[in-house]
Amino acid sequence: MLKQNKKLFLWTSSYLPIIGGLENASKEFALHMKKQGWDVHIITNRYPRSLPGQEYLDGIKIVRYLFFHSPLNYIRNRRPDLFFAWLIMKPVTLIKLIVHFFRTRPDVVNLHFPDHQLFECNFLKYLFRFKLVISLHGNEVERMGILKKRTLRYYFYEKLFKSTILITGCSKYLLDEFQKIFPQIESGKYLTIHNGVGKLHLTQNVTENKNNHIFTAARFVPKKGFELLIEAFQKKTDDILLIAGGNKKELEELGFEIKNGISLLGRLSPVEMATQLAESKITVIPSIIEPYGIIVAEAICCGSPVVATNVGGISEVIALAKKNLNSIEQGVFDGWVKLVDPEAAAIRVGIDILLKNHKGLEEYIKLVPKVRKQFSWSKRLNQYHSLLAES
Image 1: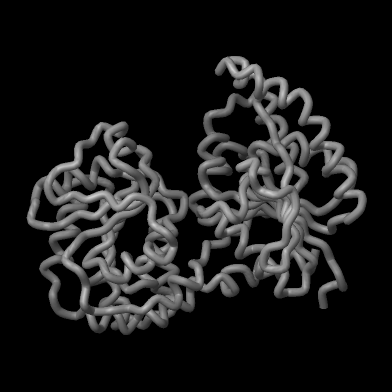
Image 2: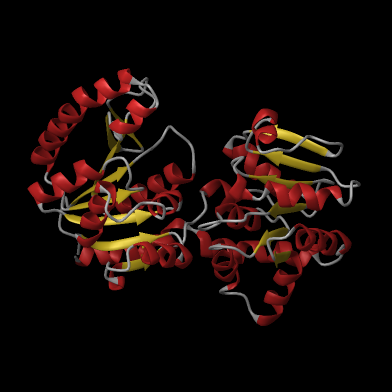
């Protein structure tokens, strides 16, 4: 049994009401642990500044601090205002954190997306000797990969990782990439926790009557593979391509023009996103780099046929989706979810196969309830809770 009032501080660089992958995952970790009887507090960055310093959401206390970092970058970027703010607020924030930790005495601190709070967390770990868990999500590992080993930031990272009882990652691929950067960290601490999907996608109405369009959604950055998708799409212009996640200017900054047959939807709300996935004839994920690929899981749970590049953690998402399917069901699934090489020609072939596959969608749709069970957050986080309860 869990000790009464055992305290968990979930320390994340960003949290609700900001909406994003990190924020959603952090929320699910917090809600799951609260449901298991933990006294959960959220520590996060006060950004934007208009957010209150303290509030309760979902019955969980959120405390926000001003975390300034990288003073040399402020100077290089000619931002003396931020440099002086760092000079003043760094010690003020640290004192506030010490007072908060002294009053509440957490048993476990779970640091999500370690980056801007490295010094503070190292210092507090030294003072209060709590058990530390670090959860990795993707972008921070990419940034760690370009660090020089003799830098102060690398030293702080290494010190933190050595002091953990557990290091979680949203995919085995991500933990393997992390191990290349920090081979000195004991691999026995690693735990893969594949992200679940939100309740919205697990309860979305699924339909066989799809709209006549191809859909994709992502941040407008090079690693998301828009170049591959647009090149693949331009080989055949009969289809309608809908792109969500950014605006025309952001796409043009990547060097692409909006041509006939391509429409930008901008940033969609979670409800709009789930509806779009459910109604799309095909969802394409053309990523070049992808630590996990949550949109693949969301698309499948909404009943969308999928073409996705076989990079990063995407193959793990597919394997998880198929885990409880029998051989016949797996054959149906493979007919509607295509993993392809990260090349424009391969993406085009995958799209064409699904466009010609007019039969069998009903059988694919029937698999959705069974697949959804694999992506419930409670199922994903049970082992995480068990390990912390035993520690």
